[in-house]
Image 1 (cartoon, rainbow, N blue to C red):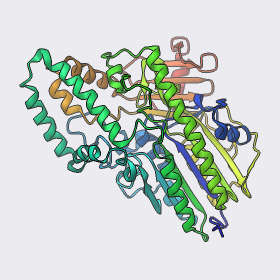
Image 2 (image 1 turned 180 degrees about the vertical axis):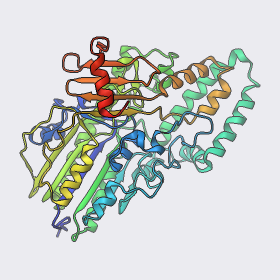
Image 3 (image 1 turned 30 degrees about the vertical axis):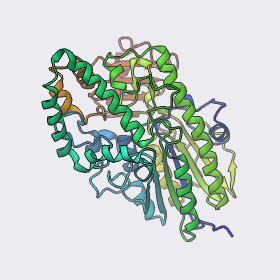
Length: 481
């Protein structure tokens, strides 16, 4: 006989966060039957905005109910000499360790919280799992299963930390000086591409499945244990949509900095291939979500539950000349799906209450607490009342090779070009939404941009010179200036 869980006085709260998914590829996509079915009958926030441009800032912001720039550990400069950030981030502390997070607040309402994470940022080691009663570090458990020997060879850098990495860089630089300058640049590029492929093969990032199946079986085990006396808060991070992508040929380079630096040309063919592979992953993920919801229904979790499907940031495929994420906050980067669904007796309750105004993902923090406390009976359009919505890019995340690039940029043209590109995007860039207008503010490092997103949804016509007073009002009103 199956066990029923979450039968306390509060409803179960479930967040399915689809890492690296942009809104434009979810809403209206008929190849995603699970998410389309939910969005048609639940509350769909069609202009939900992520608080940050990569995983750690967005998760920290959501869990802490604070803007990214006010959380020091996720808004620091990672592209600097001796940066503490690791290539796979498992030793980086994104929170200090004593913060009062969403999960810890829910515990005071009697919730038992479980985190299922497929992202190396979101683990017990980084402190982003603070407050959760049970943590399944699925990425750490399964990342080496595709090529364990190769993973072992790569992982010694992680175990040794910054000191080991700096030592390796120094030795590499010394050895590189034995290579004549005319041949060095070609050797550097070749080694960089081989390293990218080795890491990807080691943790299975070229595979279609990047944790959906492992998550399902971990969740099944969790549900079979049962927590009959407590309502559940379950947070699942799926990473299928994240690069690198499963392509029919490995001849297409997936190192974004080779494109962003101009070393490789990001033409329409490559962009379309990468986007198509990303969409293939989302279709696979959609089936996984359907299976997950069926499992939850079978175990009684959806007898009385609120389910949110959202993302931490989007993804660029050549729009505005940019690739992937941790880039400037254009719509493809920061507009994410957010669907709020309510279940009773295992059935989806019809809402028909879409919200088209800009809404911050941060609003979800308070809305979840309102559900837990009984102030709200269900998820609905109660996150709509925001005059200003802010998303912040505080710098790039890919800063672990700063020391190496600094050593090599004087001898390698490619290393210099990559170093220069990383410096270009390693600046603050904050976007402010207000009604039909969107401002991109660069704090004096670049010219600001203002868009009428109703008339110009692709953000291609900067109208700042026509509406300068509007931009000033948005800066001061949002507290950015």
